[in-house]
Length: 216
Image (tube, rainbow, N blue to C red; front, top):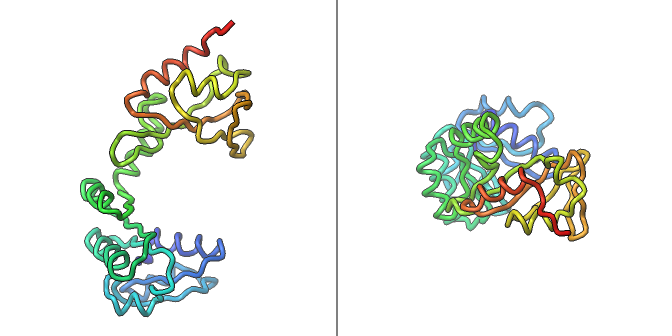
């Protein structure tokens, strides 16, 4: 639901990945953003209207995204899709981060636009470790992108995990993602994606900066 810049981009991206897409918007002129190559259904109406959702094929849908410009419309539509039609994969775009957290706890995945944008900027202007890439809704677990300091090059990833009390979810190496094993050795240029408890972040970054313990 919603054929603005986000909705139209999302629809085209899904179609490019060979998914069948139906787009709902109450303004038929908005569908022009989809371009002439879009092959999905275009349904004029409000995405929280059950008849409109039915016309768009909600009964056959595996997922529903409410990305209009209105918080209320997105939440109502997301709840109708989830509670009335039983769609499990539901995402709602929410501008108010406070409301987004509430609905996240109710089981509706939310993207808080303003908070997300602010977080993206913060991560790029604050020192490493000041703000994670991801923090779970409870604030307990975080995921950080960590460029490997030279002091760790040549050491096993398992040693870094043990000493930092974190887990390496994956490594970006030479432009590709890889899953580390116990025998994986850290190389120059590696970008680690570390999962850790929020309370342990300070310790983890201190260990990363200091380097590995001498086990000789």
